[in-house]
Image (tube, rainbow, N blue to C red):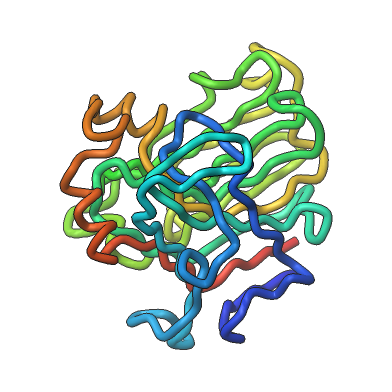
Length: 255
């Protein structure tokens, strides 16, 4: 193990993590990201290995105006390790628990440096509110957006995203291997990728944890258009009640 973030100090380690701000916007997501202890917080969490965890918690903030002139009704949290901690070839894992909430879009992933999609993107875990499954994907030049390099994994009977699970990728020189709880469910080789475009996974990528709401991917799955794209009223009500959050026990990297 060459990196371990336990999220047990009670505050974000700014030597490792950056916080995304409200000017950022992609994928028709319905939130704005802010640097706030309302959306990025720490505290005792049941089931966390040391009792403490990072919590990303969306908040209702009606009419929130971003610096770019966009107005949204939600704020949330997103952190990344850009220019502070990178991964090229390694196993990258996080222990995460998520809510049963349609249209929620928490994710654990990595991005390369430079223009998207040429820089490459590794989606270790994406969840769009269908509690029985999560997905993983690769994006790069010639295989971005609705990428052919994607796979869903379904939890075993009696399990779902509301339990603690370890989501991982092994980033190797000739393939990437995706796991949930040490169960490999997807492997993509360099040869697979090069049928569509150049391999972009032989270079450094940084780690991202975020909690988006609604937008392109959730809407494409659930078909919800109102009150927000991809985000139904039942989930909005639970956000208002403070019931929706993503909990991250730890992030670890092994050579």
